Length: 250
Image (cartoon, rainbow, N blue to C red; front, side):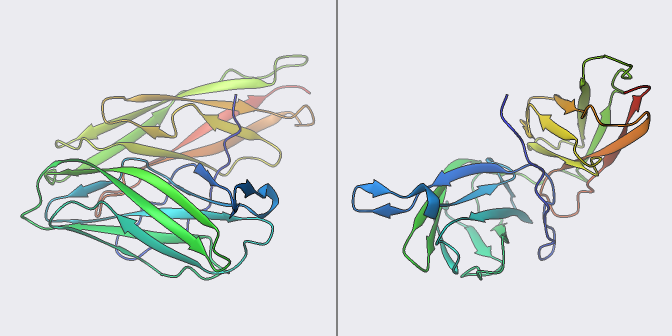
């Protein structure tokens, strides 16, 4: 089971999606035909199918990880945009001190609905590169779109019990909203690990499962964490739900 790491998101201009767990897209530094993993950097996005609603502005966030010698500014380019859709990065190049940048799409009234392959390319100051392929979903603007989220309470943990618990998260869409929804785990107690089987819930799916690993050192008591849902759409609220985990004995 892969390890999923909650990613802190900074706010972006107008409406920025602030959820989700990082979907890392590795990009190793190239030197001839060899690579140096110690000098790699990678980038990811909270939603591999960002939405661009016709007549609206929508935003998502790119996340960077730097390692080894790749510690300088990163220059971004985006290719493959369909006609009548524009995109702008919140900062470009991205300074060495930043790890998050907003990517905002603006689809005019003349944009044609559909799914389009696009690509974000990043080049570091030392000429290391990364490429992030995406599918941009262009569609009609929903009327007063909204989303919701609920979660089940995991079973309590007693002495000698298995330290792994699950919570089923259910997302809802209304007013014709049909875009994917990203899930992010917040406020985990120290040492706890949480994994979402579907960090981005596709438009045709309503459920995801959060698996929680509770350390043996956790004392008896009631603990909580937060699940946040986000669509990346301007004006759509990001609902949260608090999940209670009861530990009765170590």
